[in-house]
Length: 359
Image (cartoon, rainbow, N blue to C red; front, side, top):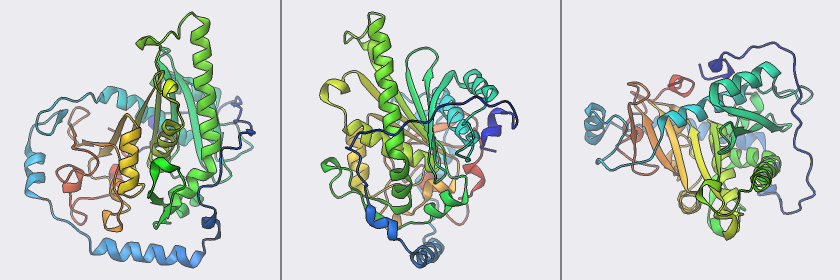
């Protein structure tokens, strides 16, 4: 199952503290949607019932193109035979790092990881955890440095507690105050609510670690604009964590100056990510964020909700793991390719077990 047990982490052990990000005096962070704080439970319930009704009437059949694709031998190929630079082994590394965030204690009084857990993460992924942040709404983000010195990896935890799951059910869209680069963007209300609660700590933590890495490289005589000096920032997450990763990548990229963009390369790998926003959001994201891979494991139901019936559109490029082993994947045509996982039937194929399964 997809959990911290994926990496066989011990449940018990002597804890060693990883300091949370301190409060910042940066006043540039403003609430994205203050009106959502007054959401009523009745609206909650109506939203859930509406989603169930529409789900029942939105089943789609496997298209003939989908049948052809399922029967084809396209191991790691882009549809149509074009080349791509998706690295499945690298994706597996970030998948495992995403899994590690489920080990973070939901108790604010507890340290985030035990010493043995951090060592296990390092051994399994080649990433050394250096910091983390949590919220009172049970969200968590962890940041680490790649042991080869190439860059920074940040991962967000997916839904794990009743509080997370309740926010997941706020399926209507809310206008996002993300700035002029995302004019007309609307985003899943529950995801926005979660994002606002963790964005300040996550973005501050990410900027601090990039600054530290840049400072360390300058101290070693690097940082003169060479390609090797570019800092690779990878943002990842599973399920709700994938949605939070996408929003963080978009906001981080939008805040970089032209000079900073030349020294930072942002990559996104998400796993089992739900749809986040409308077509305006997807367009803005695809223009600003460089490489963004959205990995779908077989017939994972979460990758198909909220439904496109509500006007939701996936961002990034889908990579469909078809179930024949790690190398049996297809790099799809954008985020909503009808011949990839969208070719599956809601009634006959889509399931929840593929959401928590490894690959």
